Length: 255
Image 1 (cartoon, rainbow, N blue to C red):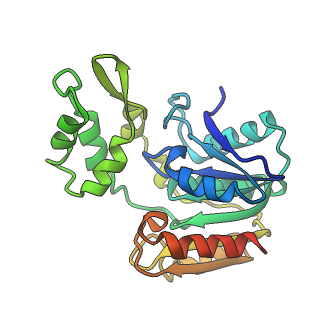
Image 2 (image 1 turned 90 degrees about the vertical axis):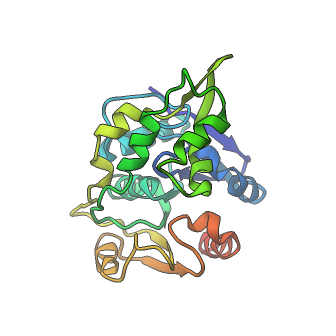
């Protein structure tokens, strides 16, 4: 089965962007529009069980990486720059470690290869308990989610997953049932064969997703990694400090 994507630009260099958990490729559209003005053809991919891509009971970094391999084969892409945030960053790492020759450069946003605790269960439980028969509007669903998810910006991000399944009924684009029972995305990424290409790891200064103890692990797997911290930003670096994030990425792309 094929992944859904939005392709922007007609440059000679492919740039594949992988969204985070509960996101979709379209979250990165504003960046894609900017980068497509230069030399890049930008691929905003919806990973399986997210966005408009197919649903599957299989959900781990090996199959997510295989999806990217198949996508590149389908588009006749021999090599691409891969950028991934959070869950998408782990997919990108795993892909680079398994398909070295298909990654010209690697950009990882606020995630390391280590194992993480599941901090999302309350979010998944809230999304899974929405009664779409009684909640008839985005506002009603937002009000329901606010009972357990206090941050309005985060709820706004989640609400982007809503669509009209019928003219009268909303639904979620992500496969919430599989995501609720699957903890594979929190597992560590490992390999005996490091990726020796140019790599950039971008962390948010106020985030705990990349800490000092992670740096040796990152460099063991990605020996050429440059690790940069962005001020005034947490886990959502690309949203919370767009200016510094964009400058950091553009400088790396010019290498």
